[in-house]
Length: 398
Ligand SMILES: Cc1cc2nc3c(=O)[nH]c(=O)nc-3n(C[C@H](O)[C@H](O)[C@H](O)COP(=O)(O)OP(=O)(O)OC[C@H]3O[C@@H](n4cnc5c(N)ncnc54)[C@H](O)[C@@H]3O)c2cc1C
Image (cartoon, rainbow, N blue to C red; front, side, top):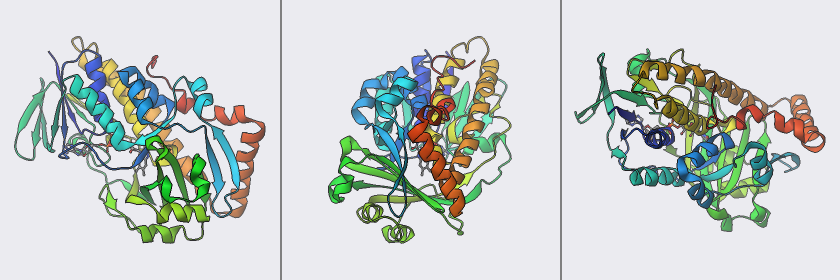
């Protein structure tokens, strides 16, 4: 029986464990450095390219119960609240892409995945921080910081943007600080003014910054992500508790509903955003990478977790014929996934530039294009995203 050790029990690692189990691999272990599953109350948007995979893994009903869906995403101007454009989601998008857009808390998504993994009797090792990796021609050994060693036929590094596993196969090149800092938090809808009662998903655009909010937890909470350009380099830690007053200051000139959203916010954390050029290689012998470990995407298209979920599905399908030849499975995995990941990384950078325009003429031109697109040429406006949301790795990936 072939065994697989997954380093990192984030969204990518947990999805891979489930996908491997569903494709018939029984000896699957996940090693996660945190002592328990993620509990942070941050929101996550899952697009159809990701939800179709979760549906295929038997999570359709659980995801539908846990998630909210918005009929549309509205783009608004930061000071006046003027609606620039609107992109339909809900039933329209589901009919177009065959799977829904979902909004939920990351902790709820992690819970759904871990519950399913417990049902499937997959070993989840919490408090197991991988600090060593050694491979021979036959196998790979993982060592924890407490000195325990586990031997596997294959190790997958799904250990995030600051991946340790990546360092065993590539010289460490520090990621580039983008000059952007993201803040995430949630706000109880009951604490917000009446404008939020219908709380559609909304993206507010202002020079050098934007804020996205959407309902989660049955509409009781609004989850938001605010991204601000700053001259100050952030520090390296992944998640830090943020100060509400600092965020409020960044948005003090903005529409009163945004100020209310920030003033009543809870669970605020901020992240300096780092970028990496695409890696030339994801695999070395018995070790491969997945998700942010090999292709972190800036959050402007909300695709980082979606890409990790797609990777997980494709890798698990490539391992189905493992008895025959794992090396060619891994190289096929890379061959299919690298161009897709690089395209999404590039698209995310581009989207960030467009969302954060500062030049008044460029802003007018962007807004005009968005407005004309959504009012008069909605089909063409939607087609722009078909390559992203229409990607269906469940059907095939040739
Ligand atoms: C502000 C912001 C908003 C975002 N919004 C969205 C969104 O709406 N939709 C979307 O699709 N994506 C979004 N993303 C991207 C998404 O969060 C990431 O791309 C996604 O979490 C990547 O999943 P992963 O499993 O590769 O890595 P991670 O989620 O980072 O998981 C890595 C795991 O590995 C563990 N780990 C690390 N080192 C070790 C070690 N040595 N040993 C053992 N375990 C280890 C970590 O504790 C962690 O649990 C957003 C990102 C940011 C910053």
